[in-house]
Image 1: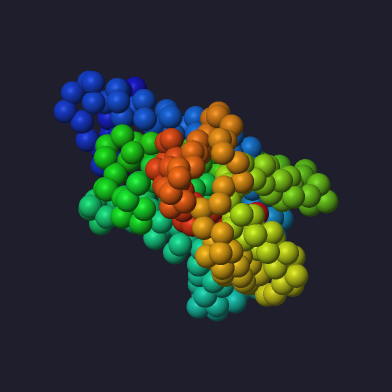
Image 2 (image 1 turned 120 degrees about the horizontal axis):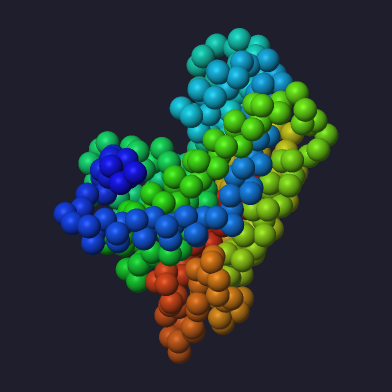
Length: 305
């Protein structure tokens, strides 16, 4: 067992010199697992829904499993599903998937300062496993007092990210496997997409902690509903752009205005805020400075959910 664990750790660039360092890495990965655990029901449901849709559309179980392991982007998979079934040109499929997944450029930019010192292989691996939830939880937990220029992630931080990323990936694939097996049994009328979105919505509400975030989330949600009929799920991109723009405007007039002084503590406790006499000094207990970047991630995720 330890041999397999050591191979896994080295694959992710989590090198250690002794058993104590290995124990610290495993402990940080376990913390990542615990942090992401409340979101796994939504991840599982999304995976199940995606697999059911793909198999019901005529794709073989093997092809469905291959796509979900290699692509690992449920929204893009659902967006290009009709194109694959209709044997659309490959460039159309690629362009559609790229438009749907443009939000990952933002997520990658958010974690880039932490992992810029890693090798190209490790950066590509971390980027592949990065996602909506991973990005938010990681940047909340390790946000630096230096704002946009955090120091490179240390071994403990990288281990935490890997723990989250692997948890998300595993639960997604479990949902996929079960969805493939139950494709002929689970009816589309069950509305499982809504159940997954509501599950994530509960987590997002706890993460939005200032008026800019509230404004951005509300506007993004209304924009998503209004433009929902746009082709290729372009409403996702429109909602993100409009929501972030509104939040930035509100943030300019209400800088660092928290909704509450101290947030609840718990597994997803990422903000414990105290307000100094200087309005620019808004410090978090675990995450460092609470600025527009934190709320922006929540706004993007809210629009997509």
